[in-house]
Image 1 (cartoon, rainbow, N blue to C red):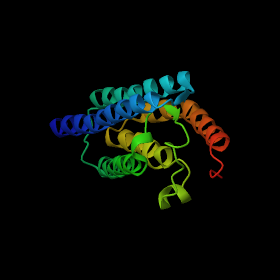
Image 2: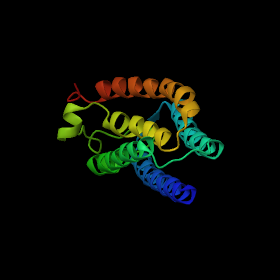
Image 3: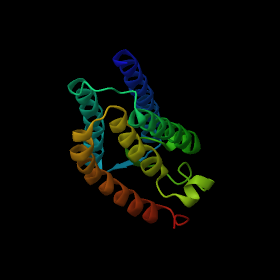
Image 4: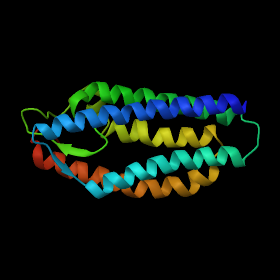
Length: 177
């Protein structure tokens, strides 16, 4: 089972790393078009916290020598798969403006997404991807310490990011309500 867990963890990690490459590609293009970056320090903090959360879950996996083929493992796997599907859907939906950083491109390039998902759920990347991803990963690896300590700490920069993003979207796009 530990072998399967390692494969699962690294598969999840690779899926997440691929999004970093997508983000970097989009960031370069947006900056070439004159995009402005906001919340630079908070973005760095979110990236560090995200990798630290993964590392914490992985470390706890090795410290906890329990049986992982239980309801928590399968529930966590389902939640995590849902979160990754949502992440890739969000990337698909907003395509060239999706980054892990907070960038606002010129108005003729950066549009407000009116897709059904974005219409009814503000910030689906955070609420349907990031939060379920962290919870799912914690459940898979029975990483209770990481969940109970790391998750609330992660919420601090995430809430700040959501507030910054809301403020910027309202200031830059009249169609954003």
